[in-house]
Length: 535
Image (cartoon, rainbow, N blue to C red; front, side):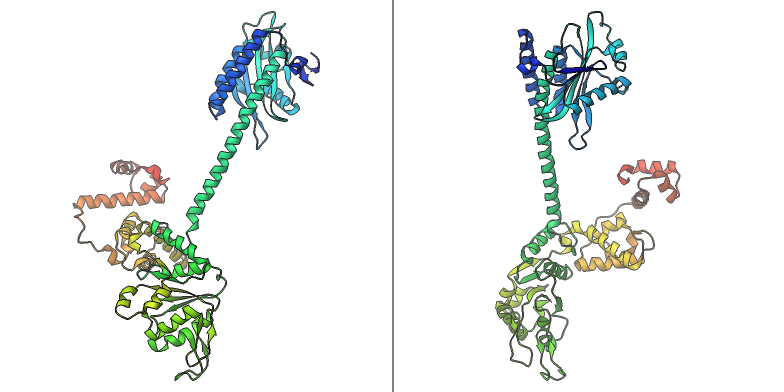
């Protein structure tokens, strides 16, 4: 054969055979068989994007035409560039651990590295492959087992290799077999490329979906707020929508729902984040001085005014002022506040000088302003100035899925502050927290957990650490049953806690409870406890 060289019993092709270059074949029957095989392989590869589903039938078809006894399709890993034998025919796992198989892999690697076909015409003449000849009982004079390895190309790039062992007469050449292997390689290469592109698109979509999921999970969650319930996600969405504007916000909701946290979250997410965030409780000061505190006063404006003093609006210039309990301000202060919202300017008490203030106002109230308007206690025009963008903070009883998240957050916070090692809340205590009505909302829960951490000397908050208000039996509760059922419930709870602490280790849990492993096993069986859930 022209365009090739021989080396230690192997034939290395320096160029494609002339017959292959011309695309000619002397046997029309074989040509028909080759074309039929290529068509079947193409149709098979089109059926699935998973090559492992289709390579087995492809190799079967190759065996029928080539007289192939063993075959390997190796694919280059795009990331590591390692050549991996992924699909085999006629090779058991034991055979794949032999020394001669390593020699075959060496030859396939050579074909890939050089990008040229490689042939061992007679494996009996190859020192490493010769033992394989004994596995061919039909090998008689006039026949030989040949090894052919052809690179799989995608344009100018080698992406793999097809290697076969075939039994054929000595007179049978290699040009036709090699040509067909190269043609099949191009078909397989195209399939590999399509599947690689599909895999890349899939990975890209997975990455985008992951980012989208992270965005959805984190987008509406300010760092200073805890909760993932639907009502809180709505609050986070409103905060994000209004944060970057100068719009006045009115936070509505019961006392203790976290209105101040929401106000600070708005400030931090706004363009004013590097300026002052000033909190002012309108219900904390007497009526006589609230005006002076908000707008400032001049020296001598009233008895005790010994010097000029800036008000909260001047101090917060360029930043944000949070007016808590806005429903408690006096009618005269309401008029001045309305002017601030309309004209962005103030006058100190005892002065007629106008002072411009660039302040964003966030107000909050737990009172029914609409009812106060109807009774004349709150100005309607001020209400409309404040109520530009209302955000309703939900009561804790309306976001029960957040109770455990909040409780865990407060446990971690107070454990750290008090230097304790409280790590969790027992199941019974959790049930009590979830069932309670929480009239004081998040603030009451925070105080409740602070008390529990203070009383707790172990690693878990138990039911008796919670305030008595949470332990009072509701009149609507149904009877709890017999004494035995109560004892069983307590026993089950203790076993649950022990398994949690030991991460499902029955031996350790039984020692902590002072039980034998046999007794512990019987109790676990009695209460149908799946210990795997604790690991």
